[in-house]
Image (cartoon, rainbow, N blue to C red; front, side, top):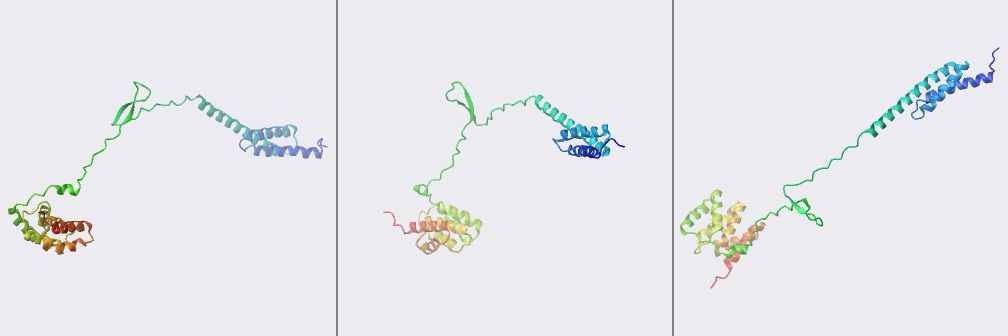
Length: 248
């Protein structure tokens, strides 16, 4: 006859189940040590007293030991990392040299005589050429075209070749006639009316400011209504110069 009653056997098997459950729960991080210790104690009680549920108790005992070892190793690893971080020397903070540009100049610090600090100097302002107003250019009279050059320029204007028209119109823009020259004025008027090159038409209108005659007025009035504003401006100036009363 066994000395263990049925109620006692049920209680002892319950201890074996508790040992197994605690051993399994010991695998949970942070709580593993407590569950592993509980599984170790309950498993030992069942095995030492030879109570029912030896297989469950043995499984709980093994899992409890494993979880306790894992938790002890984890504690040692964390402690070692903390010790390494604490014992490591602090990182030296290096002072960076002051940034000095090629335009830097020593500037005295206010309130501290004798001390200077590098401060970038203000870059020099680059001067841009200022165009004189149109009236200033017109203040001095244009040079008179030499008579011997008029025939060559007239031939260039009548040639219809762009490579000859461009320098001819530009020279006439910078000169004035000694006396009215109807041939050159007529040639410029033809360029203004018939040439397809818009830049050459503007040059012709500009030159007619100096060389225009009354016969040029119809062509200039037509150019004054052109959508190109630069062409309009030179045409209107040429009209104003032609229709202006002659000085007494």
